[in-house]
Image 1 (cartoon, each protein chain N blue to C red):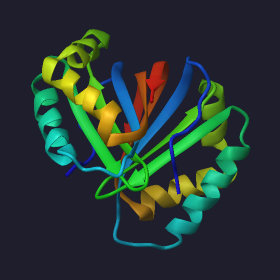
Image 2: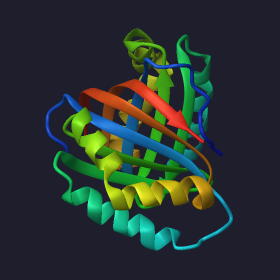
Image 3: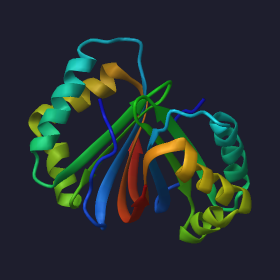
Length: 105
Length: 105
């Protein structure tokens, strides 16, 4: 379950991960849960939002580019990235973006 | 229906709109459809992705900050923004972010 992330005053970074799943399950749900647990323990992790219909969108928020790079290099995360490319996703796109401004209700 | 947006080489901008719906419908689906039609006609519009579970995430992509500002000031969109605040959403957050890098499968 996900809701709106509580993030600090900008600037900070967003990693927008948009994906279309492949037909196979093969441990996907468990890995997704584990990756969020791990990400939350990373220095510079600020928050996470996700939703899926035909397309899935997950946005993770980070203090800076180094925090994103360190998470990308996490050993367990690297295994998951390989399995994601090979098994879980038919298609995906990762966009790394600097949040300059935010507002809300 | 939404899939992964085809966007040009960075830099470009993303507007990440994360929301929790209120209980009321009151023309929401029709307005959401209309707003996408209108956004697609705006100069600088690059693409759109969305998914909703408990939380909804919509990401629109734009060439630059002026394009985002012009869309925000569109008269019909302004009416929808008012109705969004007053009626459709229990909570939302808008984040304006500069996409610096992207990659995918």
